[in-house]
Length: 435
Ligand SMILES: [Zn+2]
Image (cartoon, rainbow, N blue to C red; front, top):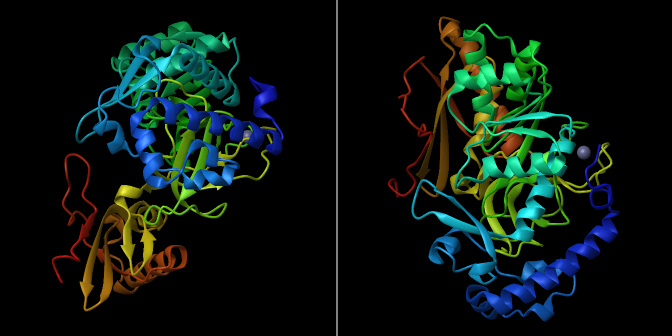
């Protein structure tokens, strides 16, 4: 089922005509109302009148997270403050928060896009939606909340934490849809087990998971443990919050970006050039309808690719594939862009290798060298050296095949790579030190 059949199934030509009209209007609005953008347009030698086709998008300047910080708190707002009805903010691990403001129309649009998202996931107005996303300055909780109400479903605004109580309320109220991060989904499952509740016995039928990267393996795991259809949702506060894109339950193959509101591009994170259709790079989004804080060519730093082939659900809006990494983490090895997460997924798919690894990049003469140290799975360590060499060769070959770089893969003893409490440090780029 499709919430807004007219907009979500627009023929591509009509959709692009709407996008162009909205892009032109957007450029006029920010040029007139946001000093930062006027300066950036002038610096780039472009005026709103130069935008005559969608391909002219490439003439416009990028917006970075740093621009939001530099204009903290309200410098990028495009409407008078009295027209803002809500603020959200993302904390970020470094530096100042980034603040976003919504007009009443922005809030309404967001609710509609979340309602579209619910229906894409298979939900209807009869559903009981258990919302474990945090309520507050974070966009997750309220974004889901307004969308569930717009859909006409029943929303349970439980927010995060109090996991035991969450499980008993899911049971008592008969939740049919769970919204949370995928990792919290697993925590709920564990708590349910401890309480003697089998989530598969509840009426639960849909899981909408997002706000952190996850894999298809985890999808299968969650579907199996909860007896649900699990779909991936994407969003970021700078662009709106959750509901920028979502997978349809019909295909579960990439997230439809609501293109009547967002104009996506994929760029090479180093050169900033637009990449040809289907190639992997950094996702850049222009907000076409946002009034409070419209953003031109916002660099999300998320690495993905776009899929324009028709989807069997009937939606014509482009699909973005799972996020495979962050461009901040990208390494350039002998001119090739490599994401540690790509190496990680190759290691994870290799039998006999554990998820503990390190990537060490050095420079010998003028040549970059990469050594990938992987802990061998404990159960295999006693195996013959020959088998270990085979595993090393297999990983090496797969990396070369998929990423186009030569590496030296070395298996190391179980538990020999240091464990860290927080985010594990995986990459050691020693190139400057060895020069
Ligand atoms: Zn679809």
